[in-house]
Length: 484
Picture 1 (cartoon, one colour):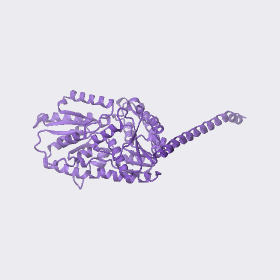
Picture 2 (cartoon, one colour; picture 1 turned 90 degrees about the vertical axis):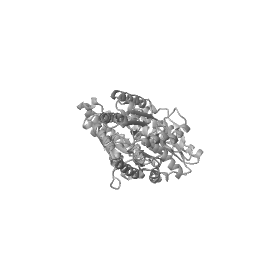
Picture 3 (cartoon, one colour; picture 1 turned 30 degrees about the vertical axis):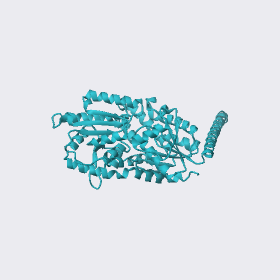
Picture 4 (tube, one colour; picture 1 turned 90 degrees about the horizontal axis):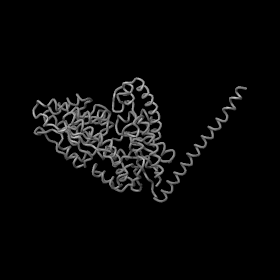
């Protein structure tokens, strides 16, 4: 009797669940059919397939944007009968202004125009919108932004080139598209988990969390659940390209698709810096330390300024003093948060008394960047677990003595011995950075010149030509599926 009563109570619930699932399936099928009909109508009108890149910040001046434009240029040169679209959230500019920016900043000119789909809700992926649970908030926001992109334009092949993995199942299962991804940096990594487990304060693990056992334990659980969802979303990709050995290790452990994953080093404009002369610099009255990187918190410009302060303090009594050294911070500002961060960095320089020896160069054109590189002695980079580091490669191509963080791509792929010779220096905190700068400046000019020569020769494997060849080879299977 009890079983019968329980069954009578559960039966309506089971029926309701089945009906809801059926309605959901029918709704998904209806949306998929609607989107496919939109794509078919567009195909009939254009007479050719379309490849779309999802890059909401395509007008920013970072390494990810350089990958985007080089990838499109490579595909346009290889496939003449395919259209290309870029989904962007840069509403304040025109498509032509975006392309002009790519030419000015990266010296890249596309063979043919591309179509831009301007997304109105990029705010949904801004970290400032989510002061807490930022990873989850941005990921959910990317789904809504991806939905806006999909309903505006349904491509035949979708490439996420900025790391929004949660858009991949959307385009694959609702849009019926082939999907691929180029991963610069995993949204979450085992290193991030270890930082929280060990309760180490970082830019993404504030003191009030690292000092609390309960909050740290809660954040570990949150990160583990998020990593599971991230892996499920990423595994939807038909093709996965990663930019370094470090990123490869993390993506393989999270997305678990080794047969679809390959390393494609990002394109670095090596050739543009080869005409910077390599000669001894012993007669320089002022040595310049140049830093290249967007003004994002993870780039850790504060560490650069504090280490530079220590170097200046040590040189007060030495030959040439502080006047013989300057720090030049070059980078792009994507939004108001980045501009506010620059103001705080300027304030830090004033507070430490080094403002007269630190210069900020924001969103500068390529020629000015090259001029600053040519005048520099040391190239400085301080991001912990940098996924790759295009700015590092460019400094080495320009013949600078590189000083990078002892982690991630710089440690595994870039600042490594070349034919048995040293190519640069690595450090991991204020003291070791300051000591390394002192050591570099104390080297005989001939010894510095040899390191610079080794560095320049070693980065040929990161050229535009190498990237284009590897990118086209990786994309070949997916491009072959497009019906022409």
